[in-house]
Length: 142
Image 1 (tube, rainbow, N blue to C red):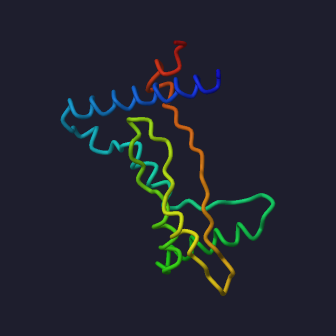
Image 2 (image 1 turned 90 degrees about the horizontal axis):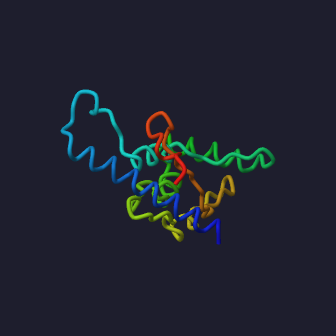
């Protein structure tokens, strides 16, 4: 279908872009300007460290997310177990591996009786596209 072919084209573009980034990084030794450059998977992992879902219509979800972030800040075992069950380091980006499922059983095993907080496995969708200023060819028609 058209949607599937567009999705494959998008994955191919991402793979090409990432290949260019990696080969450029490998070909050019680090300089003062490039020392602070981060790999995409590193940026995603850092973003996931502080991520907690929120809801406009579910106050219980917001409360549990707040408790989770507090638990992480205090290194509470159940919060650390939830974080550990998540997929923080995304691998396989260059080959188009777009699914990172985490550790399902470990996530569901989390339960906090005092707050009735229970781990729930969720699949998130992330869309990645480079800045047009950095990579204008990405947006050029095929």
